[in-house]
Length: 94
Image (cartoon, rainbow, N blue to C red):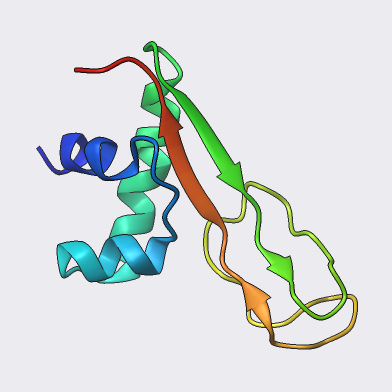
């Protein structure tokens, strides 16, 4: 049931793990596990997952799209001013 709720939350609305956890009143680590499972499962449906990777706001370094949690520091400039990755699901209406 939770993963279906997650699908609806992310449909055409990009959100970070922290945003999702806040909306569902859960811990971010719990949301990450379910989100990873949803990303794997959705490949076999008519939906498409879009991940905007985390990015350093200081130097513009882009992290890999597989990283769903917000990194602590930029490996390039060592700043902590990082935008979180955003996940969005696009696809058919229910």
